[in-house]
Length: 386
Figure (cartoon, rainbow, N blue to C red):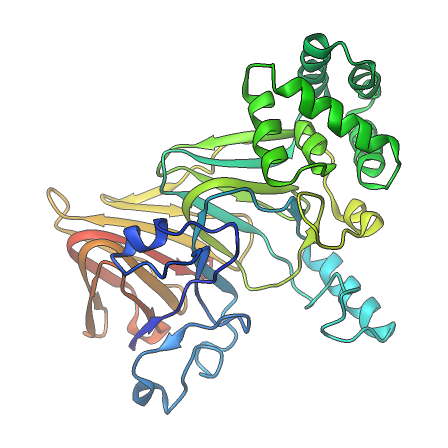
């Protein structure tokens, strides 16, 4: 079954006023448009445009066929930085949710860290040139070099003293530095001021990161914590995967985001919201990484498939037209398709058809079987991961 869906972008303050509208060919609202949700998550379930198709169900959360979709597809447009955050593993989420339930915390309690018992890995497919993000801890030696450069510009001993704490076992020093920066020590404010002051007169990506974050979140300890992380610059078509325990923040850009359908977020700075430092530290992965794009599979001409290491979701990127007259789309379960340019006709193995124009989206239930895409356009398809 093909079921057309739609939604209204969420107006978080960091959202762009133009990027989603320009991508999808829709009128801008005049307000920030941060995320367009296409899924069954209760926070903003996608509307069913013809409820007669679904026995009167008005949205995907109310329709039995889609009420338990394991993924959430989004269009994300960041005009400014989001909060530093990380997400738990399945085991951590389940244990934390049960622990907070046993403690009697209400579902909407501001003291809750775990809104549900599920993990929330995610990926972002860059559409803008560039898409900027912070992603995972980097080698502390690189962070020390960045801090030493800032210290040399300003001559401020507070920066040098913090840099010197980054020697030793990588995981241990990163954990210790994170706990100190977020733990409320009064000396942190002075370090943040020193780093921000030095960055005004410094060159390079690290200084640029500090200037960007200090403009958005003045005085926030996350400004210095960001210097312990990788800054990732994605070109259009590149994908960044953010597994459990990865501390990250999107800084700017337009992309297609796909994640497990969970609301479990532990924040680590760049936010006025509550930060539970011990719980955050308990789920973080402090092993340094190099933030590299996720490599796609190429099962056919015009088809890229991005498969993370979780069963919840995979993202198919389909481009038809020109030399690519048609493209196969594997459908291992109920899918959500979004057309971002041109027009694409979908034909199911059982003979059903639907044409999506730019800006249109649909649910495709598993009984359609695998699909064939024809026409001239670009399509993103979210499915469970086989």
